Image (spheres, rainbow, N blue to C red):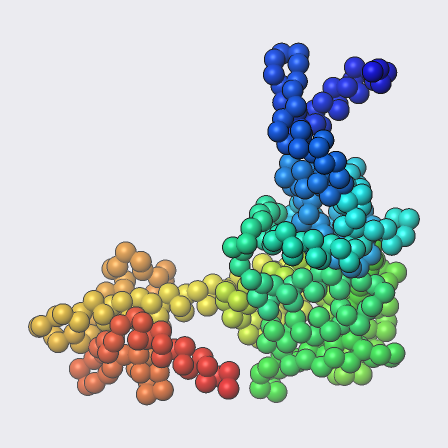
Length: 409
């Protein structure tokens, strides 16, 4: 049988079949069918082909939970992959993946240019045990042992999805309110005509508190543009609530004009990528709303590097706590002084240790000793001759955890 294929077309077809694992080279000029290729020929179905395609190429079935039941065009999916996972897939390669999923009945066309998951998609993924986890540099993996999404993971996912769901703007407003609440602000979801979407107030004494009016902008395609933001109205909202700052939240802010206008009107721009980093940072280093104030004081796209001093202070404090406890525990077996150490003893022990803190002062050592020995904390003991350990690291950790629970009510 002759198909009248050109030599270049034949090479391209064989290359694709080889990548799929359907054929393999048997000699310099010949190829043979593999077991996978033979199995597919015996039961040629679009869903089986999609499974083979998924096994051979990255970001195939992983696209399904990303698209979900919202409507996304190729460009929007492409931007979402890059912004959220730092994955760069060409328009043509992405369209091929979507067409494979479309033929398999896992996606359907919402319009001529947009796709969404089908009802069959959810049952297919759960029935086959697919559970995807994507790390910060966009490598994907599948398997039943993946960790369950935390509340923060779910909130981050909702922020990304809602930022692209322009047909339901209230969805992003609710996600933004939850986000800033998680970051330690007192938040109020307002919305509605003539008002800001979210009002966030820093949890601090009135003399040091500040407030922010936040406008949430969802877009179905690409980042937020200057045409979508009425900066004069935002200023009216700020005055209405006597707020200190104005912020706009959206999928991204790459357009030069909106960045320039935000700087002219003293408006901070929060992309979803930055909010994701803030939420993940908060899980590791619990900054307070006062620490975040610097982000609002600079207009335009926010610079997370401004938080570096606050992060460094927190890490220094935790290291100081660790080294003070280690210093006292190291003297437990000392018979000469009974395990007691003065503030100066602890300072010199830490100063000359292998894990010393840069520019360590005796005053900060003293402050940490007083904190740990206070009746409410009680991680170390204190008498007229000095300080001493009263338990292990685990004992101290348990006491600090109980104090944290008390703070949470």
